[in-house]
Length: 171
Image (cartoon, rainbow, N blue to C red; front, side, top):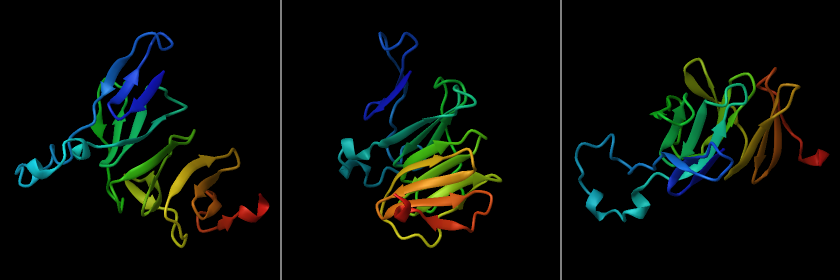
Protein backbone atom coordinates (compact mmCIF):
# COMPACT_ATOMS: atom_id res chain seq x y z
CA UNK A 1 0.00 0.00 0.00
CA UNK A 2 1.42 3.37 -1.05
CA UNK A 3 0.34 6.94 -0.40
CA UNK A 4 1.83 10.22 -1.56
CA UNK A 5 1.66 13.58 0.15
CA UNK A 6 3.55 16.86 0.30
CA UNK A 7 5.93 15.15 2.75
CA UNK A 8 6.85 12.38 0.32
CA UNK A 9 5.76 8.84 -0.54
CA UNK A 10 4.95 6.34 2.20
CA UNK A 11 4.65 2.55 2.05
CA UNK A 12 2.79 0.19 4.36
CA UNK A 13 3.34 -3.56 4.40
CA UNK A 14 0.67 -4.21 7.06
CA UNK A 15 -2.50 -2.66 5.56
CA UNK A 16 -1.84 0.82 6.94
CA UNK A 17 -0.94 0.06 10.56
CA UNK A 18 2.65 1.24 10.08
CA UNK A 19 4.12 3.54 7.44
CA UNK A 20 7.66 4.01 6.14
CA UNK A 21 8.72 7.02 4.07
CA UNK A 22 10.28 5.77 0.82
CA UNK A 23 10.62 9.09 -1.08
CA UNK A 24 11.30 12.60 0.16
CA UNK A 25 10.57 15.62 -2.01
CA UNK A 26 13.81 17.21 -3.14
CA UNK A 27 14.75 20.87 -3.18
CA UNK A 28 14.44 22.34 -6.68
CA UNK A 29 17.88 22.87 -8.12
CA UNK A 30 19.71 20.97 -5.38
CA UNK A 31 20.94 18.20 -7.67
CA UNK A 32 21.74 20.10 -10.81
CA UNK A 33 22.79 23.58 -9.71
CA UNK A 34 26.27 23.82 -8.27
CA UNK A 35 25.90 27.54 -7.68
CA UNK A 36 23.17 28.38 -5.17
CA UNK A 37 22.82 31.86 -6.64
CA UNK A 38 19.36 33.09 -5.68
CA UNK A 39 18.32 29.97 -3.79
CA UNK A 40 18.41 31.76 -0.45
CA UNK A 41 15.68 34.08 -1.76
CA UNK A 42 13.33 31.16 -2.47
CA UNK A 43 10.67 30.37 0.11
CA UNK A 44 11.67 26.98 1.59
CA UNK A 45 8.24 25.40 1.05
CA UNK A 46 8.00 26.66 -2.54
CA UNK A 47 11.45 25.26 -3.30
CA UNK A 48 10.46 21.62 -2.94
CA UNK A 49 9.37 19.34 -5.75
CA UNK A 50 5.61 18.79 -5.50
CA UNK A 51 4.47 15.20 -5.92
CA UNK A 52 1.58 15.19 -8.37
CA UNK A 53 0.81 11.50 -8.89
CA UNK A 54 2.06 8.03 -7.99
CA UNK A 55 1.67 5.27 -10.61
CA UNK A 56 2.20 1.56 -9.99
CA UNK A 57 2.77 -0.78 -12.95
CA UNK A 58 0.08 -3.43 -13.10
CA UNK A 59 2.42 -6.10 -14.50
CA UNK A 60 5.11 -5.39 -11.92
CA UNK A 61 3.88 -3.82 -8.65
CA UNK A 62 7.49 -3.21 -7.51
CA UNK A 63 7.90 -0.72 -10.38
CA UNK A 64 6.73 2.75 -9.31
CA UNK A 65 6.70 6.11 -11.06
CA UNK A 66 6.23 9.56 -9.53
CA UNK A 67 4.99 12.61 -11.41
CA UNK A 68 6.46 15.73 -9.80
CA UNK A 69 6.83 19.41 -10.55
CA UNK A 70 10.48 18.75 -11.46
CA UNK A 71 10.10 15.62 -13.58
CA UNK A 72 9.54 11.89 -13.24
CA UNK A 73 11.18 9.53 -10.76
CA UNK A 74 11.15 5.74 -10.88
CA UNK A 75 11.74 2.88 -8.50
CA UNK A 76 12.18 -0.74 -9.60
CA UNK A 77 12.30 -2.18 -6.08
CA UNK A 78 9.08 -1.10 -4.39
CA UNK A 79 10.34 2.33 -3.37
CA UNK A 80 13.64 1.38 -1.71
CA UNK A 81 15.68 3.24 -4.33
CA UNK A 82 14.64 6.08 -6.64
CA UNK A 83 16.22 7.62 -9.72
CA UNK A 84 15.28 10.41 -12.06
CA UNK A 85 13.56 9.04 -15.18
CA UNK A 86 14.49 10.32 -18.63
CA UNK A 87 12.93 13.63 -19.60
CA UNK A 88 14.28 13.55 -23.15
CA UNK A 89 11.47 14.78 -25.42
CA UNK A 90 9.31 16.37 -22.73
CA UNK A 91 8.50 20.03 -23.32
CA UNK A 92 7.82 20.66 -19.62
CA UNK A 93 9.25 18.99 -16.51
CA UNK A 94 6.10 19.78 -14.51
CA UNK A 95 4.35 16.40 -14.88
CA UNK A 96 0.79 16.36 -13.57
CA UNK A 97 -0.25 12.76 -14.29
CA UNK A 98 1.32 9.37 -15.08
CA UNK A 99 -0.26 6.19 -16.35
CA UNK A 100 1.34 2.75 -16.73
CA UNK A 101 -0.48 0.65 -19.30
CA UNK A 102 -0.49 -3.14 -19.06
CA UNK A 103 2.04 -3.58 -21.86
CA UNK A 104 4.70 -1.62 -19.90
CA UNK A 105 3.96 1.60 -21.78
CA UNK A 106 4.18 4.81 -19.78
CA UNK A 107 2.07 7.87 -20.55
CA UNK A 108 2.38 11.26 -18.92
CA UNK A 109 0.62 14.59 -18.99
CA UNK A 110 2.18 18.04 -18.71
CA UNK A 111 0.93 21.53 -19.48
CA UNK A 112 2.52 20.99 -22.90
CA UNK A 113 0.63 17.82 -23.83
CA UNK A 114 0.18 14.08 -23.50
CA UNK A 115 3.28 11.95 -24.09
CA UNK A 116 4.23 8.27 -24.40
CA UNK A 117 7.67 6.89 -23.53
CA UNK A 118 8.90 4.91 -26.54
CA UNK A 119 12.33 4.20 -28.01
CA UNK A 120 14.18 5.86 -25.10
CA UNK A 121 12.37 9.20 -25.45
CA UNK A 122 9.04 10.90 -24.84
CA UNK A 123 6.84 11.37 -27.93
CA UNK A 124 3.93 13.80 -27.96
CA UNK A 125 0.51 12.30 -28.71
CA UNK A 126 -1.65 15.39 -28.28
CA UNK A 127 -0.63 17.45 -31.29
CA UNK A 128 -3.53 19.58 -32.43
CA UNK A 129 -5.53 19.34 -29.21
CA UNK A 130 -6.36 22.57 -27.42
CA UNK A 131 -6.40 22.37 -23.60
CA UNK A 132 -5.03 23.90 -20.43
CA UNK A 133 -5.05 20.83 -18.16
CA UNK A 134 -5.05 17.04 -18.43
CA UNK A 135 -7.15 15.61 -15.60
CA UNK A 136 -6.78 11.87 -16.21
CA UNK A 137 -5.43 9.27 -18.65
CA UNK A 138 -6.70 5.71 -19.14
CA UNK A 139 -6.65 2.96 -21.75
CA UNK A 140 -8.92 0.09 -22.71
CA UNK A 141 -8.41 -3.46 -23.98
CA UNK A 142 -9.07 -2.26 -27.56
CA UNK A 143 -5.80 -0.29 -27.54
CA UNK A 144 -7.35 3.16 -27.12
CA UNK A 145 -5.94 5.90 -24.91
CA UNK A 146 -8.45 8.28 -23.31
CA UNK A 147 -7.50 11.76 -22.16
CA UNK A 148 -9.85 13.66 -19.89
CA UNK A 149 -8.98 17.30 -20.58
CA UNK A 150 -10.46 20.55 -19.37
CA UNK A 151 -11.80 20.94 -22.93
CA UNK A 152 -13.45 17.48 -23.17
CA UNK A 153 -12.82 13.76 -23.38
CA UNK A 154 -10.66 12.54 -26.24
CA UNK A 155 -9.79 9.09 -27.57
CA UNK A 156 -6.63 8.18 -29.40
CA UNK A 157 -6.39 4.85 -31.18
CA UNK A 158 -2.95 3.49 -30.36
CA UNK A 159 -3.21 1.26 -33.44
CA UNK A 160 -3.41 4.40 -35.62
CA UNK A 161 -1.86 7.22 -33.50
CA UNK A 162 -2.78 9.93 -36.01
CA UNK A 163 -6.49 9.13 -35.58
CA UNK A 164 -7.57 11.45 -32.74
CA UNK A 165 -11.30 11.46 -32.07
CA UNK A 166 -13.20 13.82 -29.84
CA UNK A 167 -15.73 11.59 -28.08
CA UNK A 168 -17.41 14.26 -25.98
CA UNK A 169 -20.51 13.99 -28.16
CA UNK A 170 -20.83 10.31 -27.22
CA UNK A 171 -21.31 11.12 -23.51
